[in-house]
Image (cartoon, rainbow, N blue to C red; front, side):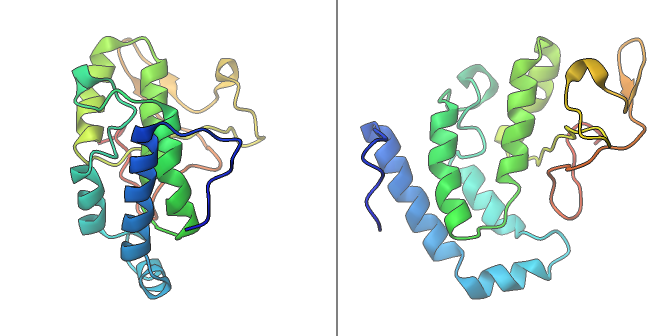
Length: 171
């Protein structure tokens, strides 16, 4: 393994997490497996995702009260970097974006409904950009607000999702 950038300081916990993630990704994502996953229906293996859930990675930046580890985005990045290096195809990034969107909202009931599910392996995603590229939340075009829900409609671009969407918002 190449030495980490000397300008980046890792805690002991982050170093252990990095070592685990590098070993996991190296073992689980040889180039042949990457090619095979491209041909699958979902673009990732559910069994591999379940292993990541068992390691606690899906809930790493989720507060403990929702079933997560209560760590930060620094730990998420520590896991995500080896995934990118080894082309490990999973819905980790889209799920982490979904988690951060839920944490940014102020609806405790919504957080309590979805964060535990995401920690337990539900796959999440977000639709961030309007067709012309705007991601200012004051200019959202997709969706029709109702009294206590939103009926989704319209178009979004650059939706981070597995090939077959399993969006927690619409299940």
